[in-house]
Image (tube, rainbow, N blue to C red; front, side):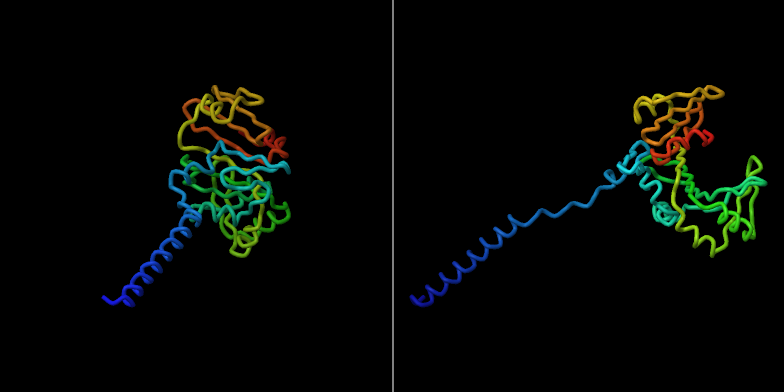
Length: 229
């Protein structure tokens, strides 16, 4: 091999080595790729006892911002399990409700009922325009909304949530998750109502039955007194 060829080979080797060092430095300085959230991490979000109280007196619970989230947000959260209707007793205007079952609050499965803020005049108009209804227990009827009214209802804001876990939670379970309640009100048949006004939350436990956990914005905690357990 001639001297000129040797120099060319050596120069090429040095160039390759320099490129390798530069690439190595870039790899060391580059931020590490973010790992995709695991299914376990996702299942630990939106649990029934994860209530975030915000500075304006509202709260986030079950993945929804009470007083801000709309029916459209609820639909996005619950996918295809959502049933929406106007529910009313004879002689009453009624309320707009959405039912999602099954509903997964993190790894806790159950049933979710959502209440909305809709003016009475709008509810009355929707009810009058409904072409079908279904009787329910306790003299209540479920009025289906027309397509146009359903589209209007998508912007209704969430005012309350009621979650009924499949697992039967005891008073001890709820105390472990939420802490000591501000008040405990004894109910019939050995049931008890645990009140957490700072969280905007009531929890009703009945021996041998499923618990009911109710959420409103903490600034509206007084409304919980008017909501039947």
